[in-house]
Image 1 (cartoon, one colour):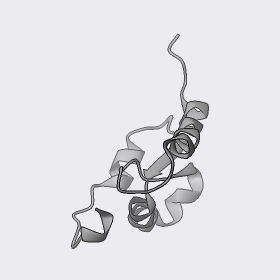
Image 2 (cartoon, rainbow, N blue to C red):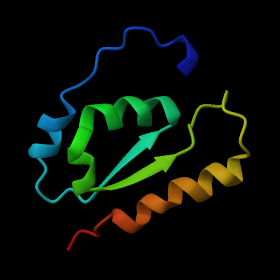
Image 3 (cartoon, rainbow, N blue to C red):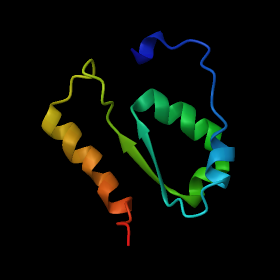
Image 4 (cartoon, one colour):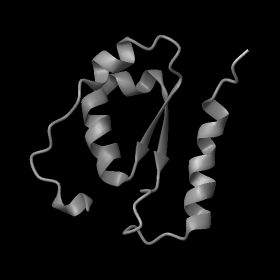
Length: 82
């Protein structure tokens, strides 16, 4: 559970973003991921659309239909292969 996370080891988020020049959106899976991710992004978060998603964890007690609706937002940011 997110509440059990202590002293997390962050990834090189800014380095990853720099390696993805076509990146348009960044999604965070749950509130804790969003807080940690936004802190890591700092001012770089303004360069991308941020999608705040409810946790996919079954411990997060939001109805599946609500989670599905929220997660389907990501479709808007996918580019179909040509």
